Length: 229
Image (cartoon, rainbow, N blue to C red; front, side, top):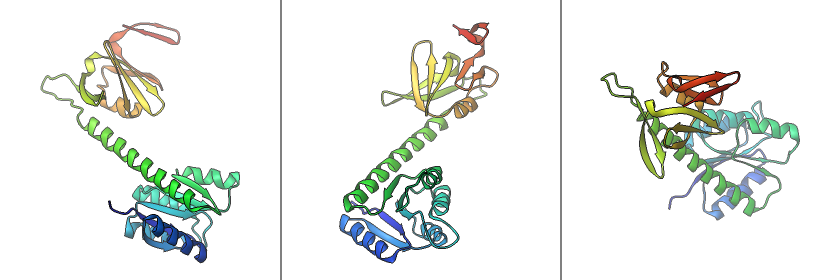
């Protein structure tokens, strides 16, 4: 099994060296290290690591948070913060960059290992979901040859073709949407905005941030309530 590549951004030389030794002992490959945010972004683009260990408080004009934000936007690489500062203001700024972990100094080797493994696992699963979602929606057909528009959804590890004419309504549920037909419900990882783009505009209407309904299935409208077949 190939080793995971880790990039270390730490402005204390002794701490950086200790982390490198711990990572090598744990079986990881250290692809580089730096002490400044600008160099962190440069090295991340050069080495394309699997994960970045980022100290929040760095020397220079660019903080670790700013560097992490650029790395996330440019490369989609998971970042774990290393810091001796755990105040609410710092934490609030760090959360915006969507880190995969937050380790407070001083930390033990087991904490480092656990955080890295959890981050790598989470990132891999997120990539699988995104790949699956993109594939599913690439199967959406809107043919002008007389065929009914269809959408493919995953159900019990299978791809099921659902004709849009059979969809009664779509409901938002956190990071998922539920497609309701007269016979079944299909829950998929998506957003209402994405689903709305895939449905025929002339046949569906978004009546609420959490609901899209098929217009010809509306029976009555009673104040804030919409009754469908």
